[in-house]
Image (spheres, rainbow, N blue to C red):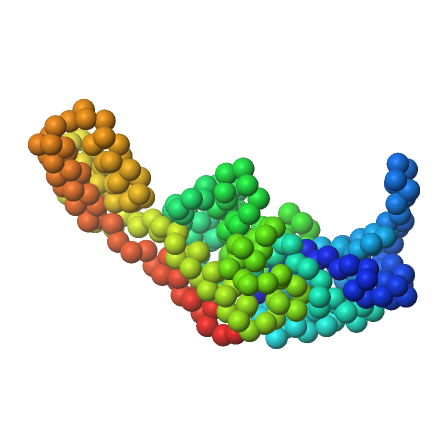
Length: 313
């Protein structure tokens, strides 16, 4: 399930002779010399990966899944990840198993019964992360920080924008992709006890850890329940409509938001204890109007996809 990764391999780790030959293995390789420092670097591509060779180290950026499978629609499981690292080592002529990972994406593409947008709009808030909807995608990110992020997007739309060919057999499917992304300080963010290297990616315990984080982060997202078709049958006047709307909004609201408001109201001392109690009762009665909401079959479908993706290691 690994996709885009950033790898760094030090020159001393592979030896002088091997390191010096890497640039000759790249496609469309070019050399650039920094006029100020005189440092030379070579850059090119290798099976769709971007490779840059500096005087002291080697950088590899791109989709490991696409390098191995030809497209990241296909899942790269743990064993395939090991084979992909071996294939990349052979292509470079250098063992990259000790290369340090500074960025990684862990995700899968799911064939869904409905358009991707229908699933995205049902995904609600996630504690501590900002919900950022875009056209055909949905991001959960820390404000102003490049750390962990969650991304849901329409894979077919993304491939169309990139002008990447869609593999045969996928033309008539709705393809939703969900990725968990980590950048910098990976051991601390992931909860791993040592430096994350290319060989760590196919370590069984590490892979299980990534599956657990993938599943836990998805289920931490609040899911927006949908209104039952019969919900409006009880509405006879504007007051009934307003009560119904208030109940729906309160039922869909993040519980932390409601609790925070209650705490702030109590601390402000604008209502006495009896008035505060009456207000709490009013909120509970209003929330009861949200009985017209029901668990959504589309979310249940996505739930099952996430669970099944994390079953095997």
